Structures are given as structure tokens and as C-alpha cells.
Image 1 (spheres, rainbow, N blue to C red):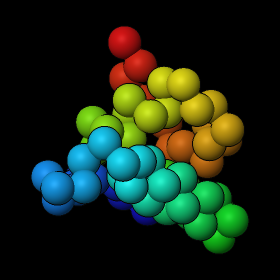
Image 2 (spheres, rainbow, N blue to C red):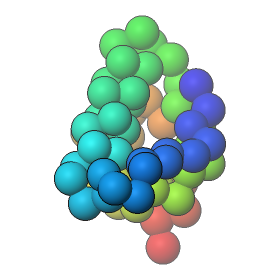
Image 3 (cartoon, one colour):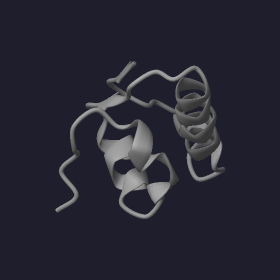
Length: 64
């Protein structure tokens, strides 16, 4: 699964919606044994502090 971009409508920014969406998508991909390719800056940032999905990542992400 390639994650390219996470977008939240401006009126909903800061309510944790994007985080919940990302958590659901990554969990679903891992549960279906899909490999995750991250191209989204938001998900890259999320994964800097949430390592529970590291086992499902294809390759590595830029954490620096």
C-alpha cells in the first residue's frame, strides 16, 4: 500500500482526525499483511514516534 498524502479540511484541523485515519489505515494494511510505502509527510512525522508499524514498512522512511 502506498500512502501518498493525508489531507484534512481546514475546519477540522487540530481535532486528531488525520491521526485516527492514519492509525486505521496502517493497522488495516498490517492486518491484511500488506507492505506499507510512505510518501506522505504527515505519516512520516507520525511514524517518528509511533514505531508499532515498523514491521509493516517497506524499506525505511526518512526519520531525520
